Length: 419
Image (cartoon, rainbow, N blue to C red; front, side, top):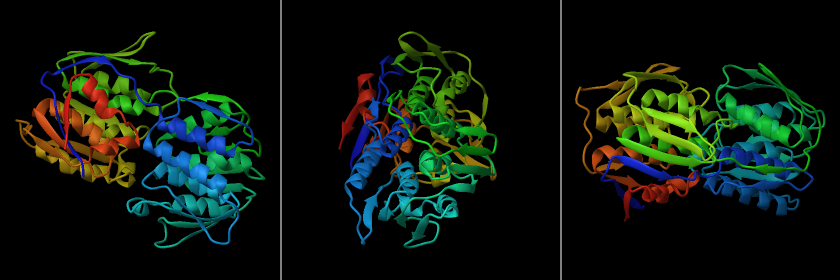
């Protein structure tokens, strides 16, 4: 396993950072390209590992002829890829064995399978019920009405939406329970509409008639999720002057709420013709409260920022973090305990960040475990501003969403030694 030691002599942050393209937008555009009968051009496709896995899987599926033996499709540790392909292969003629990494086989898929089987899909489990791998007998589906638990993952909804126009009778989805990550569903609908598909969306009901995607050009925007780590670094520095080109307030990404979040944590945001400028401001709250139900991917960076600033808080909307690349609540708790903080579950929808002593301890030469989770690595790395040096285990996990992360840190003065 690789390791790096990261340090920064000055608590200042100055430079220009070009963020990676959004993998959320890229993955949706790639799926529509695969579903469309006409040519689609995607500009600025993400170089994130998840997007590359999806692209590779789709190209492989395209080359497969019909076989009596299931063709093996490996989504590795990419949850989005696995969910999108579950629905895609259900309508793609052939026999398929959709598998993934060891961790992927611990992540639930039952609600999506139940929804697809409601409209006569033929999907079964090869091992434990409710979890990958899946045996899928793909065929034309008539569609119809389904009920879907919307409180587990918005990607279930997106997977169904993307394939819905190709169903003979279209699809009507009735959402049951609290909807998490709603902006990701809205993103899906906007991208579908960009390619000519009409979607009716009202409260707990989504309707899509049988129709076709049309040829169009789609340009992927910068990844707002990746900006969270630069906001975090800005909050922990004394002097900040960072420009992030092309990042727009009007983005379709739900994580565009970062400016309002970090306005409470000492970072100001200014949108200019050049892009987004981050500056330090003196004011910050003494206790931080936020509901991450629409933006769970921001939770780790924000919580670690609070730890770095010595601020306690309370949070809602973290429930989906337990079924990510790792159990992010448990893993984050392990790491921040060294700094005298813990995350306490008050009830199934509320968590508190608790400080256990007046003097926050930032140990020198701290070692960070990344748990095979890109967001663990990137959210914890900025604490090196407070620990003098930090060792990061398995730093290459950042390739999942932000392959240039360590190089971008070096460009603004961080010193990184690889072992």
